[in-house]
Length: 166
Ligand SMILES: [Zn+2]
Image (cartoon, rainbow, N blue to C red; front, side, top):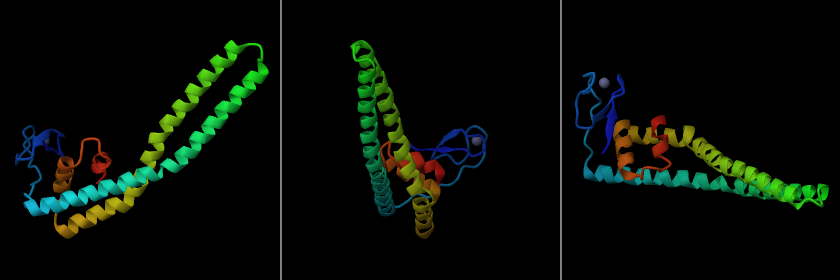
């Protein structure tokens, strides 16, 4: 179910409500879209989601390169530790494991960072401006767009996480 956040007191209200249950401020009106209009809007929303996914994918090439670099650093450091303590396998193995875990954890963390950066860069201002333009052209309110997007997309979609920026 979709909700409207009251812009004055931030309470969550049903989309059917005309006034905020908490502070009684008028809530923005939602003009019901026709089935056809809703379908078109859903298609549009899905196409935006697809574009964002493509941007996310584009970030994967540099990530593959950094993965190779991390791997090389790990192998090299393990080799150096083997050279430095040739008689103490315990130290070498411990060092190797700790270093490996640290490196790959850092790399794993950087994945979401770089992917999110790629998505943000594509979205703001380009895709965002296009959405605003589309809504203006089609005479659809931003609220209607957000509600339809919430209904169309799965919870963890890329566009859903960006809706607050529109
Ligand atoms: Zn309120």
